[in-house]
Each structure stands twice: as structure tokens, then as C-alpha cells.
Length: 325
Ligand SMILES: Nc1ncnc2c1ncn2[C@@H]1O[C@H](COP(=O)(O)OP(=O)(O)OP(=O)(O)O)[C@@H](O)[C@H]1O
Ligand SMILES: [Mg+2]
Image (cartoon, rainbow, N blue to C red; front, top):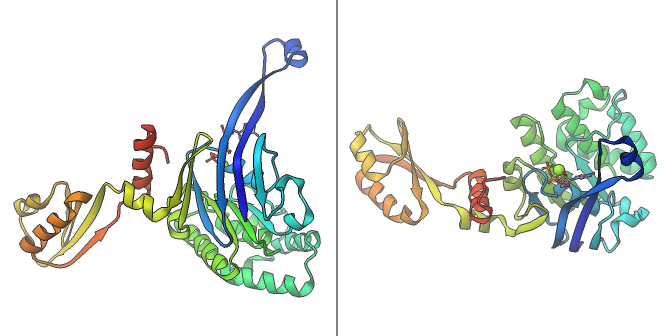
């Protein structure tokens, strides 16, 4: 579905000089290497999480994949076409939805923007009605269609962006931070939407987000990019397994026990009776659990993974000596 081989993107940026004449007649340029030789393949109906620190090259990659930008060198093929040739058949089958940029018309209602999309994508009345109905139902947003976009909250606007952006039923979707700035409830609504949309339509999706919960909930495969290079491409569960340092063991106590007994199992721990939580190094887990079951009166015991943020931080620390996410 998507093939990228040795893709490089260098931006030429004009550097201003103090002398006006030099600035105009002998312009100087600086090169920014946004992508250095990246390669990956994405198959049909995959949903891939694409993460990395600010400036890593995520948006640049998505812009190249959707035909907005030309690559400097390398090969890009999406549905067997070259995106920047912008062939109509290709454009009708992709969508690029950005959380930070608005494609809705501010003073008008979403319904007006939808009419525009209908014309651009040559969608017939029947499909139009069906698609709008399905999308608004999935997003629980039927009542928002006729409100002027400028009166909508951020979360409501994002829902409308999705209705407009996906009206033409694209086969491939690039989501660039679709949950940015949203509260946890709206984030959850958007995540649930993406999940159901993907399982219904089997679309191929690349999703970037700084909220790693999005990626954890939605993607089985993760690509991590750093300074324009891919530093990880593999399953999410592998990286979780490999870079989990500690597990969180939560014990629900039957009765209060004293501090020494808890310290005997592990420090640090937090106690909020009846729950006590230990952070235990992965290698010591079997031994510590045995110790807990033998020495503490408890009614429940769960072992939880570290947060995905902690895991990605550990990954960056080990690879690059920093803790970027
Ligand atoms: N139009 C442009 N002109 C010049 N440099 C650019 C341009 N767009 C991006 N860059 C630079 O290219 C690099 C990659 O930027 P990009 O926007 O792809 O990163 P990103 O991973 O999407 O970051 P973020 O998480 O902040 O959105 C950065 O160094 C950025 O400053
Ligand atoms: Mg970006």
C-alpha cells in the first residue's frame, strides 16, 4: 500500500543578512535535513503509530506521502502511484487530517463545508447521505452539523474536521496529531472513532501523536523517528516488553499491616489503604510476588505495565542518551 525507500528531504531556508543588498542580490540559504534516508513499507489495513520528538520529521513524511511536498531524493509509492504527481484517482482515495490546521470554513456551518467536499470529490447524493449519516453517528455529532464552525468547541470542531475530511471514504488516512489540545473525554471520543472507523472500513492509517495513549490504544505497529532517521520499526508489544524496567504491583490488603512488613517487600511503595503499590524491577517479579503472597494478607493483586511514556523515555535514554518522547 505504502512503500518508502531511502527518502530524504532537505529544506532550503533563506537566511537573512543584515545588509539589505546582500540579502536581496546574494541570498544565502541554509539546508535543513528533515529526513535522512528513511525506508518503510505499510500494508493494507494496517494502523501504524508514527512518533518522535518535535522536529523529528513526522509531518514532513506525511506531507510527502500525501503529495503536498516533493522529496529531495528517494522513492515513494502510495497505492502504486507517486504522490506528488497528484493524480486524481490517488487524491480521491487519501485523506490528510491535521489536528492543528482547519479545513472548515470558519463563518459557515459544517454542512456548507460538506457540500463543497461533495462537489470536489464528485460524491453522489446517495453516498453523501449515507457517509454523513455514518460519520456523524460514529462521532455522536448529528446536532453539530448546522452550527457555525466558529461557535464550536475545540473537541466539537475536531469531530467536524473528521466528518469533512473522511466524507469521501478514503482508503488511506494520514492523521497528524488529531487529538492535540483536546480534553481527555474528547481525546477518548476521537480515539474510539478512529478505532471503529478502521475496523469498519479497513483503511490504511498512519497516526502521529504526542499523546502516547493514542498510539497505545490504536496501533499494533510503531515507527519511531528521531532527527530524520527511523530508530524503531516494530510491534508495540515488543518495545513494551524490551524497555519495561519496572512493573507496578498493586495489592489490595485485607487488613492494615505495619511499615516494616511492607518495606521487607520493596521500597519504594505507596500506601493508600487498602491499596499498596510496589514498583518492582522486572527481573525480581516472580520472587517478589512469591514473597507478597506468603507474607501479606490480601484480597487482590494485579501486575501493571509501566506507562507507555516511561517506556519510550527508557528507549530514548538507551539509544540517544536523552529522554525525548
Ligand atoms: N517548510 C519548512 N521549511 C523549513 N524547514 C522546515 C519546514 N517544515 C519543517 N521544517 C523543519 O524540518 C524538520 C522536521 O519538521 P517536521 O514538521 O516534519 O517535524 P515533526 O516531527 O512533525 O515535529 P512536531 O512534533 O513538532 O510536529 C524540523 O527541523 C523543522 O524545523
Ligand atoms: Mg508535526
